[in-house]
Image: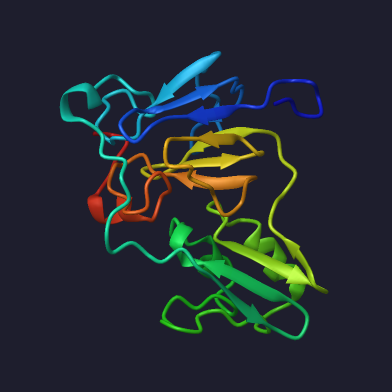
Length: 215
């Protein structure tokens, strides 16, 4: 597949038992935005044990990779919170628990509430939209006037979050043997600690697992 510039659009290909094989990617960056080396095909670690993170160093050949989804994972379900001017959609099943929503707009996103934790009338539409656009996993989206807004228009990029997941933006294709489909085709997060219950997607388990890039 090609993008509007005529370049091939990057694709991430893998099975449950192999690393992420990324083809035609130009922009691989670290958490600070510094460019990392890439090529026509680059293998990125997903077992969490590589000594050359974010790249695969073959450690999974000894310890293996378990890419199966696990029992007890959050249900993949979209819940909508309707306000006077905007409706906020939330899918806890694909949330990476980055925390950008409640850190930036606690008047709307209140993590202390277990049930109705989103108040779509808690702040201006402008601030709500700006905050939702910070969500790396695609768990959050919104509708205004009956039109749903899920995707942004960005160049293909993979950002390696510090001690966290791979943050995918720019409609990078995803192909695996489980027919995994992200909530948003434009942006989603992939587990690289090996502990997510919703593989290949990140579910925030890296925090409990104590995953670190410095290991």
